[in-house]
Image 1 (cartoon, rainbow, N blue to C red):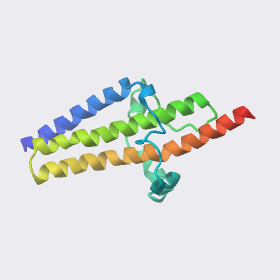
Image 2: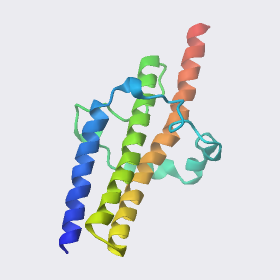
Image 3: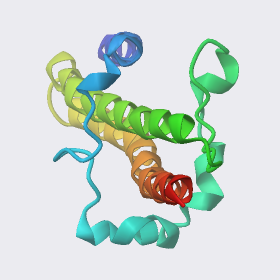
Image 4: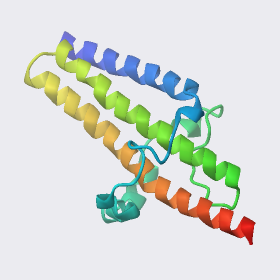
Length: 156
């Protein structure tokens, strides 16, 4: 049973560590068009996530920015504010990267708790982080489309 406690402590610590990394990460390191963040054809510009009924469940997941006022609010704002849209696109990339990093780092639970229980703990970490990655990948094409509309309106 101690393994479960150590796994919990480990996951909590990497969560805190990853949060700090996400806050300190220079946003100019982010390339929304880069290999990691660009939309894939199988995502069909977010249609895949609509079929997974993401609109029904995405707001039910925890969002630290609702409780910690010093964090950048994560509500998607499709207004015609180019600066805000660019920042939101960057933030979706950072959030996706951090949740992906958490999946990788959580492999450490398999070293703490050897065998099947460790792999079950890791699978729970994957299942716990995938919805957040999906939300970022769902929101980013919508934000990019809003940004393009804003930039076109600015030209005309």
